Image 1 (cartoon, helix red, strand yellow):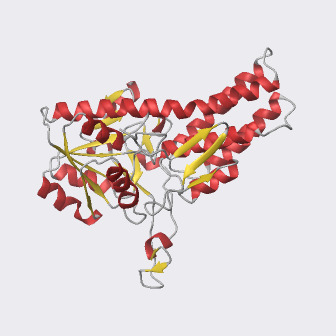
Image 2: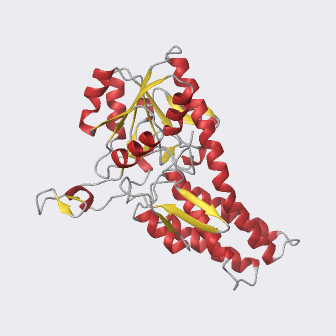
Length: 352
């Protein structure tokens, strides 16, 4: 199965697929430094918590490759921390970038204290640490796909015509490759037990209709696009077996922040006795946050609601509320949280 490649990194060159131009055009743009990455993340040319962290970290690797004016390991550590702190501000709800930054700074501290490593070796080791994220994310996504597919199949009694609903985009365009929730769907399709995917349009930014639909068509996975307002009717009409979504941050108790509209799908799934799953790498779990009430929710520009492209579609002067995410309470995640380590009930995360 050939999946889209949203992030290209080779010979210290970084390019990303500009997702603002999809599905009309597959155009790759260069990311030459941390500033480029911050802008691309903020403008949602790249999105999805895992992809944000990978692009951010690889942009720093590119910048470090071109950096000559670092004379001490302490200077290197300060440079790395300053750049990573800046990248974390690009999308505050997604935790992966923050955790990646903390891990890299910790690695820098170790290198500073190691007297056997000089400044040039330290810089090279930091770069290798950043580069390793790309391959690790793909491996994690493949594991998430297999664990999730096996769990859904088992809970549905080895049914071989599963109907799955998903929200937003969680595939190759949101990760290093394969995907989280869409990775589970890919694995179900590969196992020939998938009848059809129902993807929501995901207003107001339409990641479902622009991106997920694009990936599903690209890979010839049977799929139907539905408006967000059709979710309840679709669950009833098509007898949906499971809803599976991604996550930008998971609290220690299993409360989950994901693209706005996820919470209502969880409520509807509960009402229709449909399994509800969250698929995310362990790096999306923030054990420092006890519950979802403490997860910061990003506010997006009002123009995303009032305009389609450059055309105004809402009444001028209307007030808007445009949170990018909502929080799904742990008790509504009835299927489980799918990670590279397995499938867990929300209250099992702290001991996983």
